[in-house]
Length: 235
Ligand SMILES: [Zn+2]
Image (cartoon, rainbow, N blue to C red; front, top):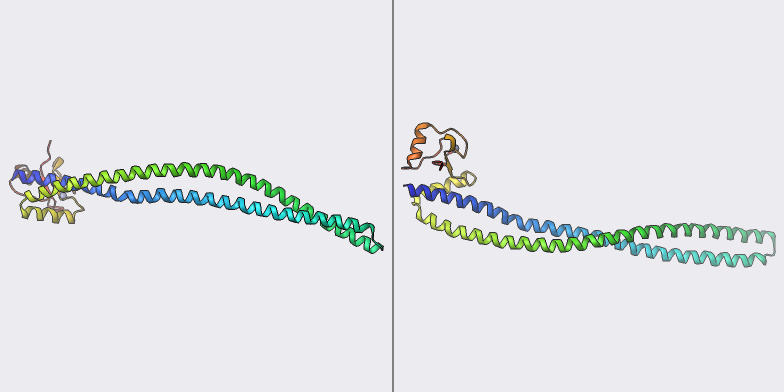
């Protein structure tokens, strides 16, 4: 009977172990996805900055066209000013020249703002490019490490699985069925010690008489409170 208890404890240890390993393995794809999402976000931020630079260049070129047009108009009205026949004509040309000068000055102000913004965007682009390429290589490295960890975990799990199959075979069918049933109902924990005279699963005190029986290990005893299989605490 003692071997039965030893095997039960071993089975519990392996199952607990496998549970931990499995949940660690299941976390890996999620961790990889998070890393890749972060890289994607940084790259998309960089793309936004690059698009901003392109837009600024376009706006600047358009402003240059507007500036040239205003300058040409000022030139042409200035020539016409001298050939004005009447005072009204002269005043009209003068008014046009003033309007174009105002327009020109507005365009020039706009060009200064665009240039300043372009400079800022350029700085942002440089730091975003640096950050993005660093993050990218870091992500590649981290993903590789996680994939290696996943293979190691898979190997460790299958090794335990093989051991588990052996252990399960060596247990009496009735005991195995009981173990599996309790494990299913009690969040994976079916075998617990009576450490400090308590059930180490639900921490209820174990009566002295029962404690003695648990120590004797000649039949399977379960906790009166939670129903888990009790084994003596190995000191
Ligand atoms: Zn209990």
